[in-house]
Length: 213
Image 1 (cartoon, rainbow, N blue to C red):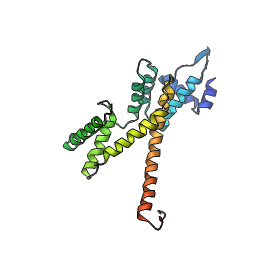
Image 2: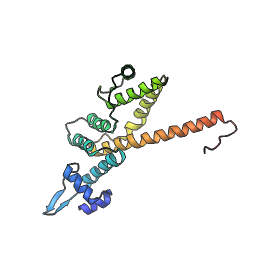
Image 3: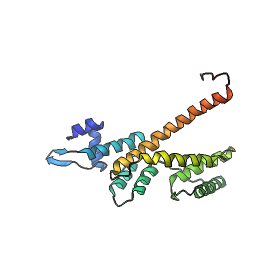
Image 4: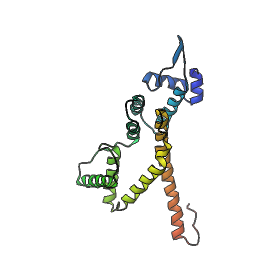
């Protein structure tokens, strides 16, 4: 297909496609004339992935480049390729030089070890959870965090990872991870709020819930 058709099918503007080509995010097409190249389904899949990372994952181009490099490095194991995308999606939280941080970090490390999770020591999720736990402890919260961890493990094991195709199409696998992590994460937050409203109505308004205003 020509670039105009690639643009129409992908929903990505031609100037943006040319920018992705210059940046090395999109591989070059097959040159069939001095000023014309042909593109195929692999270009369409890559554009879908880039859109997922930029528009849904809100990743900067520098982070997208790292993910694309991991995809194209076929010597990199599948798990490490997915990890590159996962880490790119994770908030980057800097450690705090406080006793509260150290206590929360020890608690997070102990929880991960106790659950038997295989998590890299540099995983950004560790600092994100540590920051959250430190804040929860200041507010007298967090005693039920293990129950949340066990529910998260069950959700990931029984549902989420099954949605990622373990195939040779590395672009599709990373796209599924990005879309699933971001969109299902948002859906889960919305579902929790709806479930909280429903349970509150069941417990506290036996005559029937009033509509919030």
